[in-house]
Length: 410
Ligand SMILES: Nc1ncnc2c1ncn2[C@@H]1O[C@H](COP(=O)(O)OP(=O)(O)OP(=O)(O)O)[C@@H](O)[C@H]1O
Ligand SMILES: [Mg+2]
Image (cartoon, rainbow, N blue to C red; front, side, top):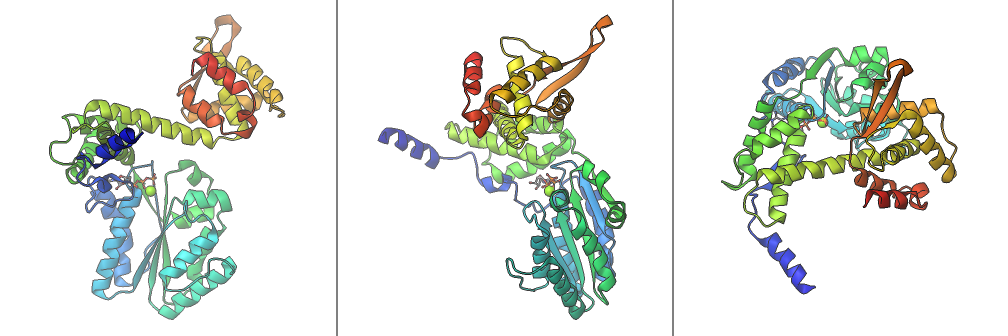
């Protein structure tokens, strides 16, 4: 046993391909942002009036995940507040991530704290906190507060848009001070469903971030890699491969950086002194598994059952199952574990949702004079899914999963 541990320790202490791994972690803020000059300039233009003591317009920023929205917003606001300090203008800025601060109370408490108010962890009503913020801003005179509300869709999904409405309206109660909002989201559906009044006031200005192209991702990765790895640690083509994988996944810089970091970690773990293309390929598989685990875990119970039925329908070497076959299997399983099955219609909708998540593929094919039928195939790793499903009490205790694992040979 000792030998095993010795080896583990030895490897960990051994030279690493990394000089500074931290530079590749998701929360690291790089000193410069490449290929975002236009976005930085536009956000700067919208917020710059605060330097003259004028209230900036509210801005709505959207774009797919990993396109630099958070990084750009933080970058611009840090610079703006620094400049305001130099000029002696009273501009304050608060950044709130609404995925982490997921109640209206927490969001307001963060805003209040940016104004040096102390808010107890619980105990006040949101109306009370709101009132204190207004009072404080009026007392501070000529203060411009810019509140960045990142991942704004999370709060609205859970608690509705009441808070946004109140924040937008707050200005009518302020005398010489003002509050401006920078809302950020990667969820396009969210915008479509937002109340029209809020949409128009929050979106006085709009900024859309487009996905990065492969060569832009290469530049971003290169500048990080210089800080992160010891010289010569990357085989030729490693960065290009990370970039091209990430470009295929809608130009996501986070994904590109994750791939590079995990590839480096794998090289270290395997005791190798160079990151090679194979490590990137392995990193991709690992990331894909993590993503699949996360998505599967958050599916509602019937979604999990339908996914399981797709796996079952494609057992025994079959590549496709039809909607009807999958529904039969689903119904049997549901009854087996003591649940009321949902309708065929609903299962059909669930199949479309699973398709959109990329877990399965559901295509309509023509069967000549028999009309059209939908064929469904699994597009993700069955073993990873089954592992997640075994966490579900309903399924974990039944023998279904065991049987499937046997037929899959896992
Ligand atoms: N132009 C860039 N130059 C350098 N690094 C970048 C650039 N754009 C993004 N990054 C890095 O990529 C990662 C993802 O960026 P960011 O967090 O800003 O994405 P996002 O658009 O906010 O995504 P999400 O919608 O998922 O929150 C971060 O680590 C960030 O530092
Ligand atoms: Mg973000």
